[in-house]
Length: 213
Length: 261
Image (cartoon, rainbow over all chains, first blue to last red; front, side, top):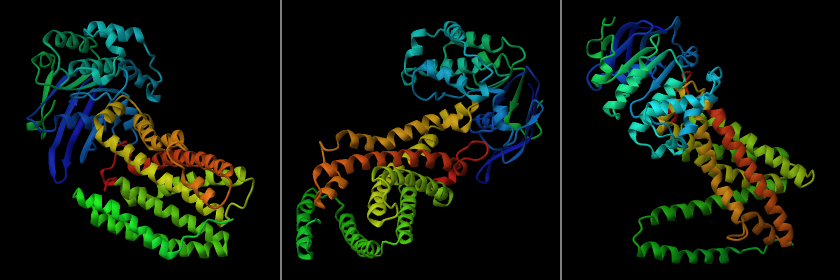
C-alpha cells in the first residue's frame, strides 16, 4: 500500500516542528525517516496514523485521504511499534490477543500457534506469555510489540526505534522477518545499522521542504 | 416520637469539643488551623441556612418546590464534581448533569415506589433526604471515577495510542481506563457495604433511630439506602464517562487538552 504526504506541517503552539514535508512511498518500499533529535520523526509517524493532527497538508494512504472520517478505517491498514512501547497491564498473552477482539479486526482469526512461532523465532520463552507485562524487560516488550504488529498482518508498518533494546542476534532475526513480505510498506525511525541496511531511501526531516521521493 | 432537640446553648457548648483537635494541631504545628476555622464557619452557616430553607420546604411540601430543590442539589453536585476532578466546566457540565439526573432518578423512584410501596415520590420527607444521600455518595464517587478515567488516559497516552493504532474504537481503547475508574470509584462504597454495622452506624440508620424508630426498622432503611446508593453511583459514573466522551475527544479519538483545568 502506498503513502503520499503533501505539504505536511505540524506546529506545537506557534513553532513549526516540521513544515511543508512532501514524499511518496510506493507499495513495498522500506523508508528510513532521518533527522536530528526533536525534528519530529516520531510525530510524523503519529501523523500518518491520525494520532497527531497536522496543522496543514494532506496524507493519502492507498487511494484514501486521511480525514477525521477515514482515520478509523485507515488505522486498520497500519501497524505501529512505538519507541519503548507501553503495552499496559495484565498477562502478556491477553495483551497479544486484545486487538483480535476489536471490531476493526473481526476479519482476523486468532492464531495461538503463530504466537508460539514468533516467540520461538524471536527467542522469547513461552512461559513469559503468562507473566504480567510489568515484569517484562524493555527488549521483551519490544519483541511483543513487534509480534502484535506482525500478527495483525497490516500492509503498512510504522516502526519507531524498534531495535533500541534488542541484542545483535535478535535484531538480525527480526529484520529478516520484517522484510520477508515484499509487499509490506515500512517506514521506520532508527539509528541501527541493521535496520538502515533495508532502507530503499531516506526522508530527512532536516531538509524537508520539497524533499522526498 | 421525634428526635431529642438540641438547644442553641447546648450546641454552642458542643463547639467546646473542638478544643481537643485544635490543641493537637497546635501542638504538632500542623499548618491547617486557618483552613479548618474557615471550614467550620462555612459548615455552620451553610447548615443553618439549609435548615431554615428546609423548614419552609417541608412546611409547604410542594412537589414543584421539592423537585426544584433536588435540581439545585444536582447542579451543585455537578459543579463540585468538575471542580474536584480538575475538569473543564464548559466542556463537561451538561453530560455530567444528565448522568446525575438519570443516576439519581432511577434508584430514587425505585426506593420510593417499590421499597416504600408507592409513596409520593416528590414528598419532601422522601425526596430530599434520600435524594441527598444518594447524590452525596455519587458526588464523592464521581470525583474519583471521572478524574481517574481522564487522568489515566492522559498519563497512559502511549498505551492509548498503541490501542488506537491496533484498530480499537474509542470505546475499545478506553475500556481499560473505564474499568479502572469504576473499580476505584466504587471501592469506598463496596468497602462501606462490607463493614457497615461493624465499624460504624451509618447516617440513615442513625437518623431513623434518633427519630425514635425501632432499630429493626432502621436496619431495613439502611439496607435499602445502601442498595440505592450503590446503584445510583454505578449508573452516574458509567453515564458520566460515556456521555462526556463526545465532548472530551475530537473526531480522531484524541483527548482534548482543554478539558483539563
